[in-house]
Length: 418
Image 1 (cartoon, rainbow, N blue to C red):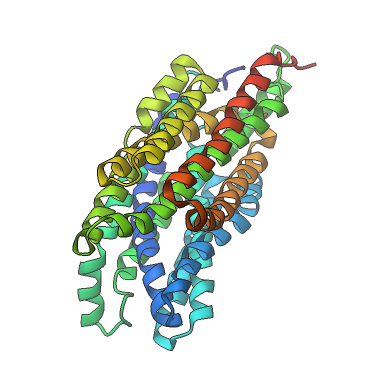
Image 2 (tube, helix red, strand yellow):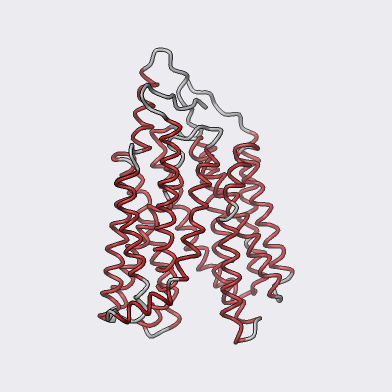
C-alpha cells in the first residue's frame, strides 16, 4: 500500500504527531464527559420513570444515538473534514447535557431519553477519533497511532465516574436537580474539547490527506493507486462488530450476576473493582496491541483478540460461581476486545481507498453499536434462561464467526489495482 507522500513545505511527520496529541487530549476530555454521563443516565432513568427496570433505557438511548449518527458524521467528515465532524459531535453532546438537566428539573422521562440520545451522538464522533489518527499515518505506524488515541480513553473512563460525588455537592450548592451535578464537569469537558479541536486540529488531517491523494494521483510519476479490498474491509467490520458484541453482552450482565454471588453489602465494591479492571483491559494496553498489529500484521492480532476472548468465555463458563473467576474473565474480555478493535480498525482503514474511508468507517461504527444494543438485549434473555455460564458459551458464536472469516480472507489473494 503506497505511503502518503510528503509535499514541499509540509512536515508530515510533525503534523501527524500534533494531530495524534490533539486527538488523544480530546479523547481524555470527551471520555471524562461521557464517563460521568453514562453512570448518571441509568440512575436518572430509574428516578424519573419510577421503575428500576427502565434504567436500561438510558444505555439503549446512548447506543441508539451513536448508531443513528455515526454514518452522517462520517459523511460530514468526508466533505468538511474531521474537525467539523468532531466539533459537531461536541455541540450535540452539549445540547444533550442541557436537555438532560431540563428533563431532570421537569421530571420528564421521555425528554431525558432524547437528551441522552444526543449525548450518544457526541459519543459517535468520539469513536471516530481513532480513525482520524490514521488519516496521515504511514502503514508502519498506523496501528500505534490509532491505539494511542484509544488508550487516552482510559483516563476519561476512570476520571469521569470519580466526579459523581463532587459533582453532586457542587450541583446542590447551585440549586441543580438531584443526580445532575456531575453534568457540570461534562459540560466543561465538552467545551474544552470543542476549543481544542477548533484551535489545535490544524491542518485538518482528513482534508490534508485528501489533498495529498489528489496530488499523488495527478502526478505523472505517481505510484499505483490504493487498491480497494472490499472483502478484507467487510471482514474488518465483522471483526470489530463481533468482538464488541461478545464484550458488551457479557460485560452488561456481569453486575447482575455478581449481585447473585456476592454478599449484599459487598456488591457495590465487587462491581466497581471488576468493571474498573475490565475498562483498563479495554484501553490500558491498546498501544501494545497497536505495536503488535504493525509488527505482526492486522489479522494475526485480530485472531489474538479472539483467543483472549475465548479464554475469557471459558473462564466465565467454568468459574461463574466465584468472584475471582468473573474478575479474571472480565479482564481477559477487555484485552480481547482491545486487540481485535485496534487491529480491525487499522485493517479497515488500509483495505479502503481514502475516498471511501469515512463512509465505511461510519458504517463500521453503526454496525458495532447497533449489534451491541441487540446483543445486550439478547444477553439478558439468555442470562435468564441458562445463567451466566450459559451466556458465556453462547458468546462463543461471534468469536467463531470472526475466526471463520479470517480463514476466508486469508485464502483470498488481494486483487491488484488496475
